[in-house]
Length: 70
Image (cartoon, rainbow, N blue to C red; front, side):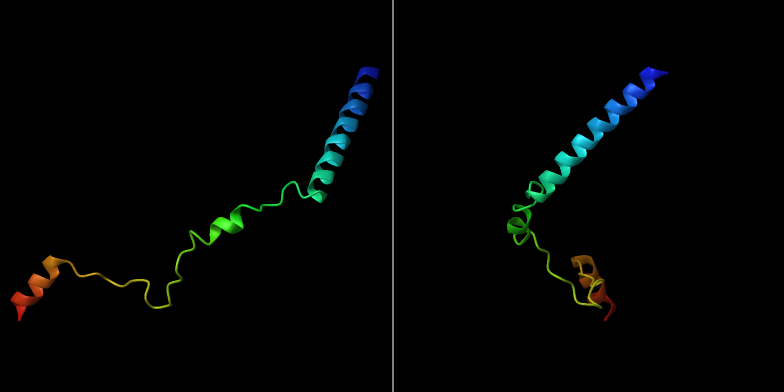
């Protein structure tokens, strides 16, 4: 039974050490993303105005059918 207490103590202390290291790295700016904002402008898509989402492009076959119906 005493082995469980020893293992619990060791595991909790290791978890606390890793948590402190994580907090320290976040405060130091380790996870700040400096690369993505500079690349984001290269891949930015144009915004589609409302009502123009479903614009249909006519194919040659549709143009020929329209000409024969007239």
